[in-house]
Length: 303
Image (cartoon, rainbow, N blue to C red):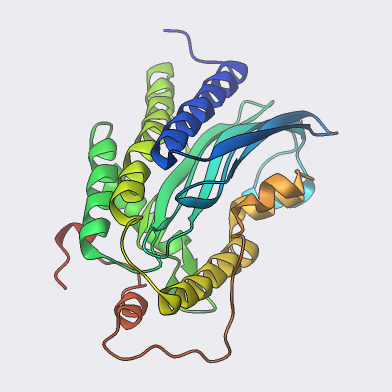
């Protein structure tokens, strides 16, 4: 079996973008994607799709890119790499729903290659509920574990812990949400292993519309009021803080002179900050705040 070239991987990821957009459009039932094709001066480009006028979704960005060129010294030094040109391709998604009862979700699958032979895969999927529902958390983590287990039994525990550590807002001492999985610099020793890791990343991509379609259908009709919308704005604010201060993908995109509009598509349409906000003890907000921490076993959580 011939190993896939970087161009073939880019084409496969582009097809995955089509697959996910179709699934999300169907789940929303009203909105549509506007496509924005762009070119990068140093090499490559992509197509960013933004969801408009949704019944359930307020803002959704599903982006594909395949970029190449000289690797900035800042990245070479940070990753401990020798000087060489790079090629990077992948699909990145962030969705912000209208209802505070529907969670924010993020997914990324990507491939990185250098012309000196260095390569790796990275990515993951994680959920950021405005309100933590243990049943929803269990469903999400179970689905993610099922995908991981089809490839390697140690993937889920290893990548779940990695996500807990990665999606952590250090200056707030809280996790961004209930986690999921995160992996980076994943590579194989032979062609068969390479294809297996690629297939793993594609399985995550196929999982995305299934799990998020479930939350769209299940949670979008739940009642909410001004209190819930206010809390949603605060949680969106935390999302902004993580993405601008800690997210490696945001930093990589900006450091490689990436397209700013596409890099910052992850930002919510509206977010709020309230000085010294405190939740009411025993409230849903209090429960959520107390469970934004690492190491929670959502597969066996007892409220």
